[in-house]
Length: 323
Image (cartoon, rainbow, N blue to C red; front, top):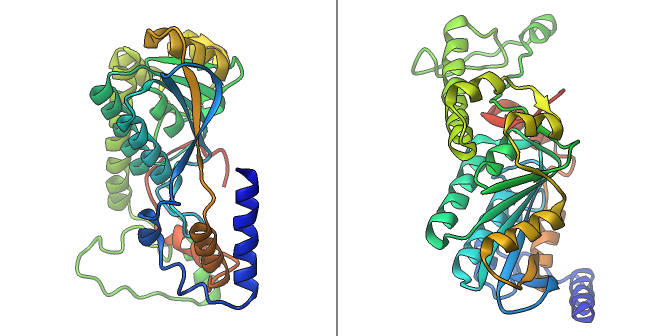
């Protein structure tokens, strides 16, 4: 298998450096999605038998945005893996390994919904294993688990919502830069970085934050079988250690990924099972697409992306200690 991958890579490099245009070979993700090469390879980690326990990984910031090469976002890839679990009748349990500070509210909520749907459709246990960090949106996903394992030092918590705005109005005034907004309504340019935020605008943003926060509190209360009042007491945005989280009822047991997987096996009712992971198969089409995106990128330094992020604030279930 490794030899095939290296051969595929060699072919890609020969094609690329021979001057064959990538534009004609890779039209976009939509075309690649139907390509047989755009698939997940199932790797057996250990175990035996016909039944399976799948380990899925949530690593890094939870985002619905494509990565720098234009390939699908982490949320899209994880959703596709969950779809595969749904369709595989041999899967008897799922272990979700989370090492994430959280991320976008919408992407996080959509993945959480997919996890709940999996439990409803397949009635299989979900065991969560938290790594070094499972904060904010990372913990939001963890609440879908039937059991949560963590390390005593795992950073968890940061239960809340943040919405950040950049404002350069004072700097612009010193430089003599002015921005004029021709708008259809009073709040059409709400959050503009070129002028101070008004109190009515602040209240509007706060109402959005409060709404998302209320959803987060409800998710924790239901997922962890805690009263809403108790959740409100502990969900003040601070981070907790695994030790503190256990005392608060936010996690169930101390243990690593292997211990969480053994617990998933016991919940599945199976005597033996293969522990499997999904890995993205290497294909020529995907490599060509990635090369195309890289070499045709009009903004190699990512400045445009930074400016776009600044001008497009979003609600975040994310632990952000500094900017």
